[in-house]
Amino acid sequence: MEDDADLTLFCHRCGAQLTPGEGNFYLVRILAVADPSPPVIEEADLAGDIESEVDRLLAEMEQMSEQELADGVFRRLTIHLCAACYKEWIEDPAG
Image (cartoon, rainbow, N blue to C red; front, side, top):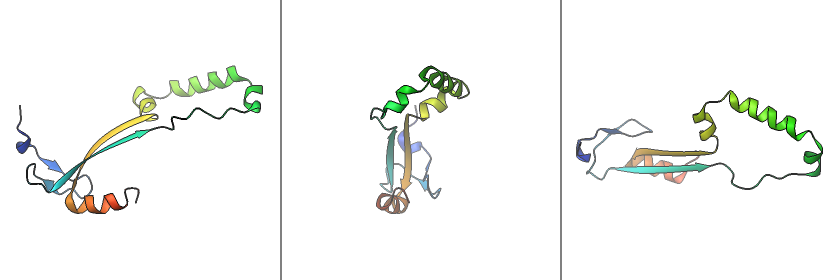
């Protein structure tokens, strides 16, 4: 088994080589989960053809891979950022 110090890592933002044990990078874990709230269902939704809508959604899903379906509701990423990129990213992660 490899020692962590022997791993070659790169910053996911700028590509700089990172060296474990030198304290010059950050490991960032991102967890994204689709809106867990129950859907808003109105009277008009119930008046429609629910069975046709379910069939349409199932047909749409049959065209998608298992990974695409899973990524649509849950995604976990682990990235490495050098200290400079981390400093910029943590201040404006969506930027």
